[in-house]
Length: 211
Ligand code: CDP
Image 1: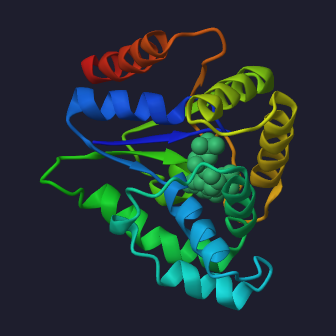
Image 2: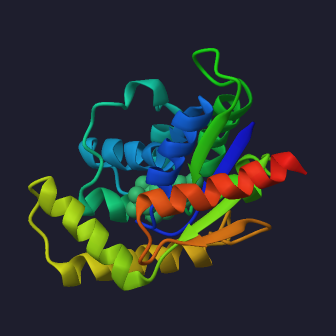
Image 3: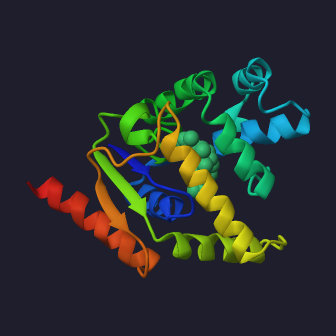
């Protein structure tokens, strides 16, 4: 079983993905972390994000299994990740790992849940289930702002909103793998609890399995 979850920033993709992975005993991959890890390296090595050759080199030397412990949720990383995610060669470098994870999941799992922007459209077009998780811009900005505050990061609601708006625009309008709904089940998480979102997805999957 492969479950693809796409959607804009801070829509609740990760929360749903983790719950589904736990419930069905599947492996889970937050693909945003791969782009964030490349951005982290670019900042650390002081590479110019517009220097495509160097950026691709950084992406190709990423060791995805080693990025677990780094804090990748800074405003700078948010921005650089969405800039380098628009580079076709960077996406190509990261695709192999994602597909391999989905089709040969680690730890003897029988399937995987992947969340990101192009899982249903590019990484796993033949996924068993495809969800597009979204929420109002205001709701998403509040959630991300609260998360940042809880992690002791200084920011303002206005700055978070502007960041999310800019990233969504970039992710939706880029030429390669733009964020789009494809043939997915859309779940709007505005005003819904994580439990309600999980149950809605479960209802769909179980309903489908009965057919
Ligand atoms: O956590 P949040 O929803 O804010 O973002 P993320 O999923 O961690 O992704 C960070 C950035 O990576 C996004 O803004 C996208 O530009 C990029 N990304 C992508 O292009 N394709 C993916 N499959 C996942 C992330």
